[in-house]
Image (cartoon, rainbow, N blue to C red; front, side):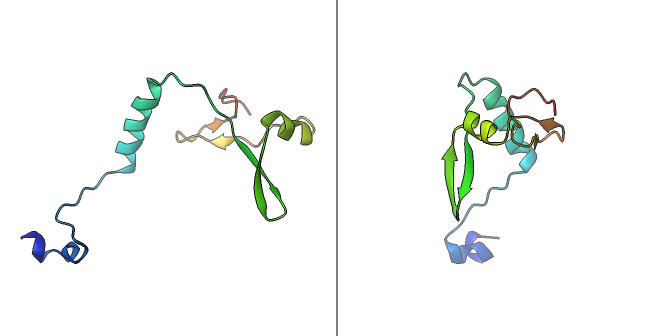
Length: 87
């Protein structure tokens, strides 16, 4: 089958590439493992209907010392902001 016979030819595509989420994750994991950049924590809060940036320590202080809720890492284990995995 030629490119002109493809349903994608209407969009000018003659080559299609597909990737899986697993392959993207594996490649990013390799990249990040060798990266020597600092960790960056960015927090936002709502003011009215607008999201505005807030300093992490200010956020914790405003929450009476409670850190933000832990996030789920791709592995399914809990991941905290400081990376310890504790809750």
